Length: 349
Image 1 (tube, rainbow, N blue to C red):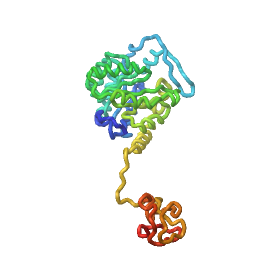
Image 2: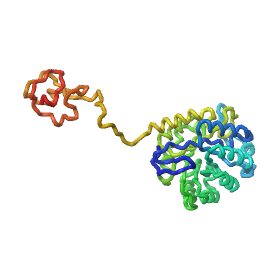
Image 3: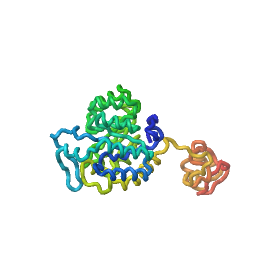
């Protein structure tokens, strides 16, 4: 539960007193399986998701033929291949993306969309996306950041694999270009990175440093980091979501199978509810807890015996003078004799 001033992302509020907004990211994991994309959207709707995260990766020419990329494949370790081949099998034409996300929007879902170029940005605006995301690859892309910030939409900056100086600069570009509601997203490395590389404290610190909303783009195998971030009071959670039978590929190792989304949402909600208030208020007429102690005669005490640590012990339940009133009674003489093991009452003093 965040302590940041509240903001709206479409129909959802984030910030003070609000549960973290969960963004299931279908990205372009579905590749050319358009029916698979529709299946993901429908399953998310059935799970109660109202804000859909997607990506507008449509132009393979954004990647030159040279260069390789490595990614983790469970059971096989690190796999390397030509980066352009990865992009070629993931790009989806703008018209197809328009149909997929229009359908989701028509079913009542708010859209948060990653943009990689001006064409994608224009489609996001056409689709009335409630927030725009600058992916980590574009944290250094001044023209794109400035264009997105100038739209007035909520802006997310993914800080993965960037230096603190690069983050500072990107935030400055965004704020100078008119970004009103800014979400700076902590993006730890993907598997097989160990938990010690996640540095979730950095996520919270960036929210304070930049006076913005904080977020986690989760690349851990499993949901443990989502739950940890929830316990820290994060504003926005993002996690890749794929079809249950998706074959190994880039980013799939840390994506959440669609069948696990409902259970994950329930656990996030449970942890958020457990955070509660910063103080405790109990009814003034509440029953006294049965293990609160009172003053009890250590031995048979005669009239005039003074209440001291030598003559009194403490026991529960509270049938006599409450132990918290010790300072009021220590040193005072008894007006009545009290048998050993019997609670001393106010009338006895």
